[in-house]
Image (cartoon, rainbow, N blue to C red; front, side, top):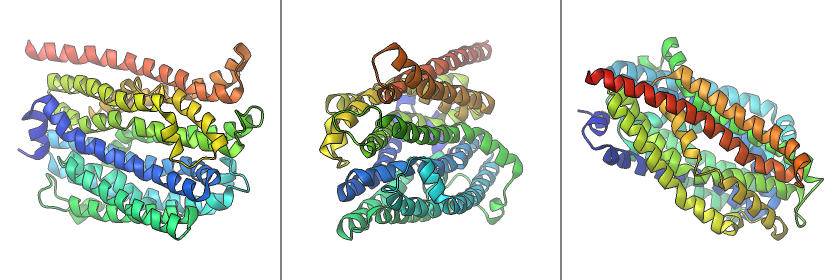
Length: 468
């Protein structure tokens, strides 16, 4: 009995979830800290303009992440289903295909970003004051995207094999290097955004090397060989189909960040709170995005931990066990989200203060953060929905769900609220834009609930049929 099989079938469901979830949540916290640390260090060194420069680059960083989860999450789902069906050769071929795809996609992204860096940054809202700080950050991040894709995407193959603790080790290595080198390059050597990007790239490079070493260890349930690096078109399509919802989520996050920067810059001139500058409004948007992503980590971690367990049970055709894992994932994830959400609502100044904003920009940033944080507890329904349908191998439903989720969110947030709300209430366009996060989240959660309710009855019928 391998590690994954033992966790899925040989332990109680809460015990298996806790065993997988603790290192996953810890690792995701480290990844979020690694992302936020650039903004914190640059903010302390360059103040608001530095935070705005890193914020402008956020959509492009999310594009790198979308490539990572496309091959990482998609491959992990196929691997889990293969191991559940007792087919380790297919699992190995899937891993090799994912690694080859990561290399090609990362090189293409780096090349395109280098050629189009300035036009893309200007389109994202970079002013002439921000551009010199944003350009080097973006270019270095782009050329280190292969390391990022392996460290954050391909490493999930190790977790799926039953070793979540090893993935935590990979992430801890990356964040430690990033923090130490980031402080050295940005604060001590005054390297600005260039130093922050170099520190991040170094951490990801080392983490990528550790990931490769783990994948080749003898205790893995599938054995990688040189021929597995030749991509299989069938497995590539299957990987992309199951990984698309995760990738689409990051892509739409990138679009949302991009649209936020453009609209914030457009609306900021008409109404700013208490002396907030345009750069301050952009920085507030970046802080909101970073902190809310941090708040969602416990829920995402629980859902991520459950993926290989749900996938294995589906591959082994165990509907009752699958349903129980889904129920416990929703309950545990919701409970895990509450403490951090409460902390932000009570003391938003603490979370905003670490970014080093100017004092006139802090009140508006706190208001923005508290508004967006209201969506955190209910987000567990959305997180479980996309994760479950991917893990169970239902690519068509997962893709349809993510399109409806994100489409309703974007339409509500960027069209309905900022342009309709000001005509109905005495609220400015800028404030309505940030309030749109609440409406968009409610719409996405309602759609997900319908899908999950239908799936619940489908599984109940399978269980009843099996018992009969």
